[in-house]
Length: 359
Image (cartoon, rainbow, N blue to C red; front, side, top):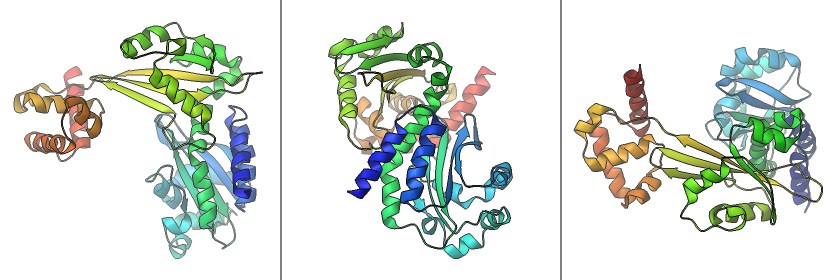
């Protein structure tokens, strides 16, 4: 019962506004108390600069740590480990042994900066937007974070990741003025704001055309929205606990195009609990190099085109009406014919050939 109360307190704090510093400072205070952490921080990578970080929330950490972090980041055993396992909470003993930690350069740096670190618990928050965030709690005593404490932070991880994403997407807009007006003027995305179940508040001019383009044959319900979106929104509205990462994003794919729909709860208005549906249509411009077309069969070309469009194996197999095993056989033959070792190398090589052809 006590754990459920803590979860509720943290979730309430994280959904109070779209100011990242405000909501995480309050949530950090609750977690530090419940998890007996002495200090901690939230960092967010800068878009386009994955190795550079902003620190919107810190607690009881010396400024010199942040001033020096760019030069010591390569020695940070915490970030190097959690980034490899996004949205998974790790304790220090799951990263490296206590002896190895105390022999590490990062441990020595922290002690030099009057920030003794004896225990760590951290999670990399993957938001799927080209940048990531890290939330870390520290202890300056040898007492380890318990498995129960790790589980508590793990349960909160999906909502922590969504909160960072939502604040980064819309926090600046809130500070600029009326949220709904700014949402439509500055995000660059097509959007619809609803106050479920009966009211539509706003819609960008091209949102209707986009829906018709993608869902012209799908059965529709309220607001002219396809049932697949209405059903997803209803599930999210009714969810009374943190959801798994990715449940509030739907992606629809076609050859050379994809549509990502993000469901975003907005701050409460009097008598309303509005949601924004943000639509991002993406064109995939990587083409199959001309010389590959001479080496591959038509069926193999169909597979390569879908791989270059970012489709996973299951989606490709379903779209082509084949089994996963058959698809994997096609991929093996493609790799041999093109002399590439892997899927990622195939995509990279196609990108390089496209750049050469364009340049």
